[in-house]
Length: 294
Image (cartoon, rainbow, N blue to C red; front, side):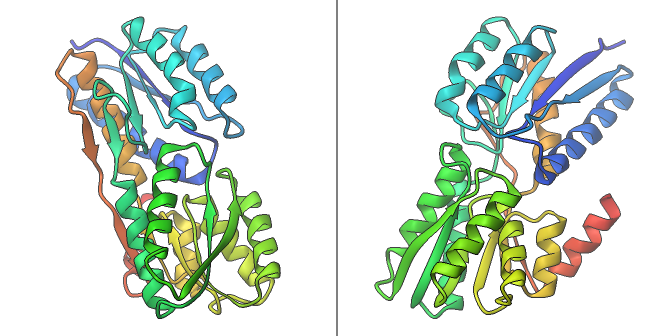
């Protein structure tokens, strides 16, 4: 009989998007348990707030129980490498999810984050006819995936001389912060034509802010990610569309890769989990799938 295994999932923060990652991880653990005839346990350990200190404290704590592997979505990969390398030195496999990897020996599971940002920005440019004032809200600025999306979006917008980019705020991957930041930006720029985001908190907070000030549908928004509140906002027409990751697949593949690593199998450098473009034309398909999975 195969030996029992315990894997740890450490997201950036407690958040509905990461809940979807956890659901994918738990489903994969169930499949492996049935197929291997062994207990495969996944512990989901989210920080209460997104921060390097908070996430490192969790990494150091969970390493003491000697799990079979740890998957982490880093808030700041530079700030986490000492903790990650210490875990690896103990013989505990580590993979990154929802993040590129700075080290080819550490598998990354996620999508092309730059391309995700490009898709969103190019779609917004078309919606506003390549002219007007656009705000871009950052996520957690040091998070590798948020940073890549932001830089890619800015690069696209700079190609259009008719577009004026304004500071869209920083949400630090917090929905209420995103709402507050968006409200301030909308008040300061009544002529704003478009808004972009870099994480799943941004579009949720932004949608609420737009409805509160009566500008839903008047400011074009192309969001990021595709969890239920974002799908609802697209259905309502508050958000025009979204360039979306596939969080359950990231959770599933994280567990699968950690299992492979526990066997000593040579690991791939990266697993690409793809990008969905969600629009008002196809949002019902995603909503139906979300209801079915819940």
